[in-house]
Length: 65
Image (tube, rainbow, N blue to C red; front, side, top):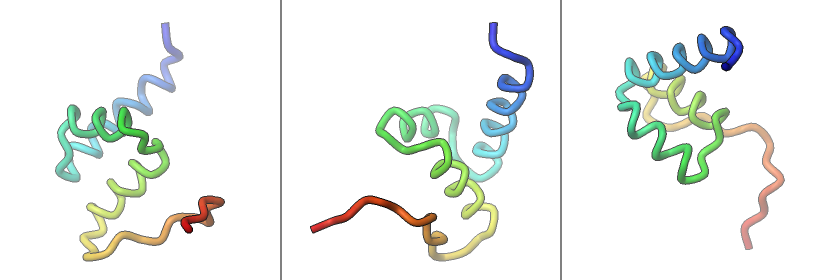
């Protein structure tokens, strides 16, 4: 059994995602495709902000050449 705080956090994330316009199935698909939980939270927050462009992510060690 999961700790109650973890279950509560996941439930809150699911509710926030649905309020931001994501279905639970879509959030699971994004995570299964490799999106991190941190990035999913930032995407949900971006939707709540109503901005046209996503905020820049924190410094990344990923280089594209």
